[in-house]
Length: 212
Image 1 (spheres, helix red, strand yellow):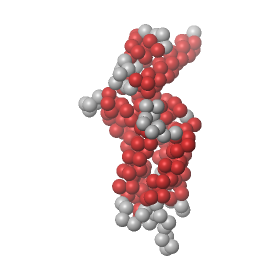
Image 2 (cartoon, one colour):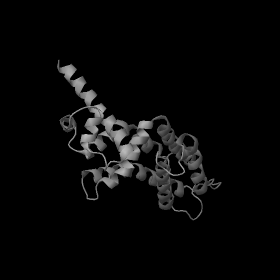
Image 3 (tube, rainbow, N blue to C red):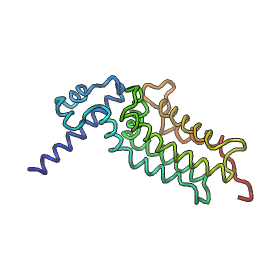
């Protein structure tokens, strides 16, 4: 009986997360209420509060359910310190991240929710801290990787690691925004992501000096 109750609770939990993800992408986080989420799966608002205190809890739960694997995988791929071909490993890590988004539409949707959730609250709170920490878990490895590329002569002359990392981060953000269903001149991640990444990487990377 306890096992059955646990299974039912898990089903409810994931059904609510699925409903929230759908509505957050359709309406935006700020325009979706807990009552909307409950109605989407024909449940009461009490069922939502049993699992989540607020929308911030739901956003964190969505990421923990879907994004932790790619977060760790990306950080590992950006460890270039002992790589014999850090430029190739850098490209491969980014290609792998893009491929994960293409294969897993739910992951793509969750990342878009995180990108757009800054609109949800302007004050410093737990959600803002979480979003900043999650963003840093991707940007910091990019910056560290770019520092290795700069030290070993793989960045174009005159380009510093910080600018290369900030440029890539902004570029990736723009790709995600323009791949959204409402995007103008919509990007198709499956067809365009790798080509667009290669355009940026070709612009910042160069072959290393002969003595490297």
